[in-house]
Image (cartoon, rainbow, N blue to C red; front, side):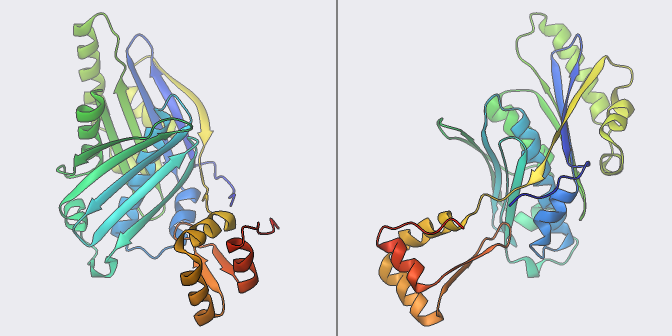
Length: 293
């Protein structure tokens, strides 16, 4: 399912000349709104979900190969699971599950998720899947992700995420290993990190990428590279749904079909509904192929 890409839905890399530090900055608007339009999340959950989507966009940009990056929190609070993924570096989707009606509207990360763990999963195309897991002990998703990079990747990384019910944004700076002058590299990192920490949530949600970076680093030799468009794209299809049905077994599926008249499955990510009537189920379980139209 392709969707039009808004000009605000972009990610850009930036580089500091004469320094071993790189960065990524991202903003989501129409893609974020398209993803959440299929759900009815409370505002606080929508904002947290936006941070997860922005973070998935940022982490995907750090990969050197095509694949999927997913960020998933599993907790014991009203929000049981929240997941966002970015695949092919530009395509986003995600989902939130839990007892969301129990939320009052004034929740923090801790009260929404309770005791939780954060899993970062990287699935290279044709390669081996990797997953890193850390406890969510910080007060923000940004802090949890910084802890993940310190523990799992051992790369000095600073992240700022921001979101409301309509927009999501994120910016990341990361020290690239390999500098011969360790003392100079550490001094540069501390200097840029101090400037980075002054960025405010309102600025992330209202300023362009260029204006944000000028506000932070106007005294530095910084190059902002070309924009990469981002979009909501769900990977569901009738054939994938059919495969899932076959895995349930013929007797169970046909029993459900007999009770309901047909099998109807709705994708949790995009709201697309797939319907299977008895002749199609016969074709599936007899080893045939469904029509592609």
